[in-house]
Length: 124
Length: 292
Image (tube, rainbow over all chains, first blue to last red):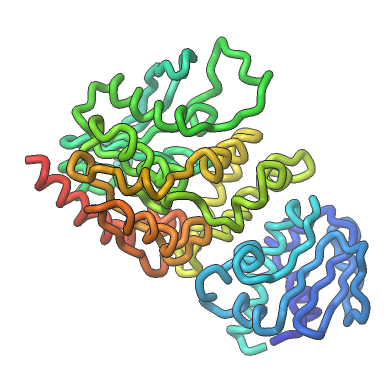
């Protein structure tokens, strides 16, 4: 399952994600292999999300990885060091924006990965 | 009928580097003293499962302490600690369990620590082998993984001591160390403990964990396990100190013993104590047999 828009739309119904993304205003850009999505949030609410053809430099939060890396990260039981975005970044070459916002919204991003795994498990 | 645990808590005053600290500790059990040290930025609550394990406390007096600035050990009264950056050093890390052992009049205790406490187990075995009968290094190595060390203290403070980022994120960051097989409630408990820390303390602890602890191959090879046995336990899912990193140390320390723990991460004592104790109990049994 590699439709990140679906992951974000599912996340809007999730209590923990909605709490952790509170007050965020800005862009979230995610690239999975040669596909990318751009989402915009205002005060913690998802305003838009869709395919992206550009790589917005002003996205405070962005995540970039090959399709293979995303498969590893979103496995039900990821193999060692794919268990989180940060360990995948340190050990397996997944790229993350180095911004205050990325650190501040890490709880939301962790929850997003759990939702991604859950959707995979359900075969979405 | 009310439910109680056998854990008792108290405060002891320890003087380290000319500063008097009021240190909180909890203990349970009787027998061989076993001092347990917590990870960077957390506190002795990590050992609550061990302190309630009768199979251990029937033979060991388990003592879990909060380093100053952690848990219920406040910053030192009478010292202007707020006028300088908090950074934990190797000499201070070693001094606290030594001072605790002296204050409680312990007879050559066992020391076990995890993460920075695991690094400390190596430093104690190397520098104070006359004071400890054995040390157990959980998630320890000669040094932490290069990928994290290379971030530098500025990068570490940017993530973990940043006014733009709340303590919630420090808890969330611990996911990078935790096994996906760990029960969710335990994972959340670890995160909670990390969300409760004092400002700048986790980052300052990492000064010891990433930099001041740096054991050379020559120093490791000189550790005398006849005087102080050194055991190593490392979880499969620990990227900060991977099993390969620990094995490197174990290979250098003649007579030491090492086990990789499948499906466990950087916080095995709290992540999944039921699994962790399968590795710990035989070690404690061996120490006990050598102590009689």
